[in-house]
Image 1: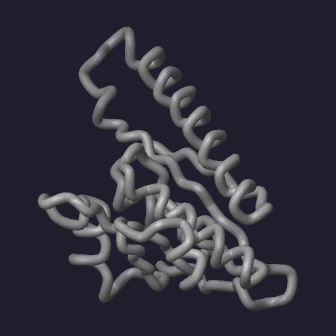
Image 2: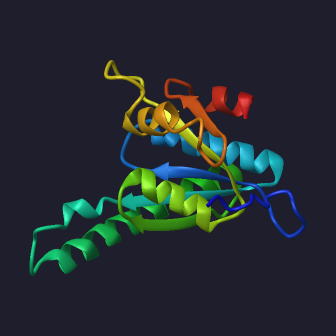
Length: 164
């Protein structure tokens, strides 16, 4: 089931979803989403996904591993949240989910009816645009519940600002 998007109804605002990870291109998506949100009166949702398969099979230490992963996620989101505020003056929503990336991205979109756009950035390496862009934009784009914007990873802040 796909939740109706309500971002243009009274009391709602369009939000840009950015999946936060440790890739260099992630910052390009953050810059784009922040600039677009600021220029259109929207918001930004930062989503950090903890891969729960990392914890399976570690009886007795699973709880500690989860706690450490959550703490690392919170620190990363705080840092990226400060970047959003510096770029656009927007206080972003911060969401941490556990599971597989594709399932948790869809779940986050389903849970927030104001999310209207997923902003991704393509990698610049020789190995292709990156696993997130490949998996979401490549295979699921025709049935994805919101539009996907892919920001070229080689663009600088000023170039992104000019387009956003």
